[in-house]
Length: 158
Image (cartoon, rainbow, N blue to C red; front, side, top):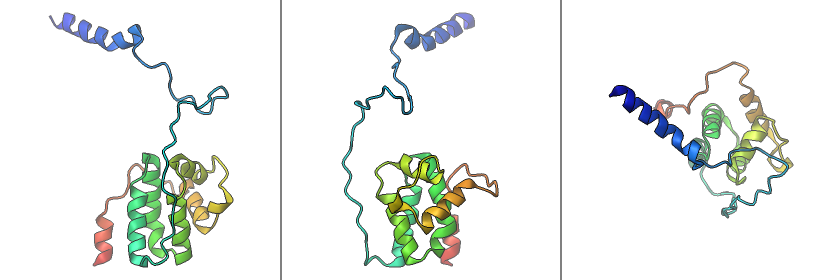
């Protein structure tokens, strides 16, 4: 009975491949023949500077926005970066960081700029991007597998 059951389960798991139900289109990267006709552009509201926002609130908002990204890689990278640098950033640097993480519509762009896989557009180049690029290199070989817990916020508030 066990043999028949296992055979049935194994055959069922292969059935979609055999019958062609699995999509043949997968991630192909930037293939030259990809027209990107299947991409959907979702309009996003334009980034707006918040000049009257109190610094303490801005830091908290940026910390939250660093943690809640569209992709896990940036969630980990930016939340750890924010934990390390956000509380020491000047107003000018906070503005640069705000613009960097909120103006581009594609999180992959930020990731590619930080890892230097693609050149950073001039509008995002500055002190903060330099810090982020250096942080991304992880020269101290820290284990960066998850976003930091929020316990450190409680310690700072006491």
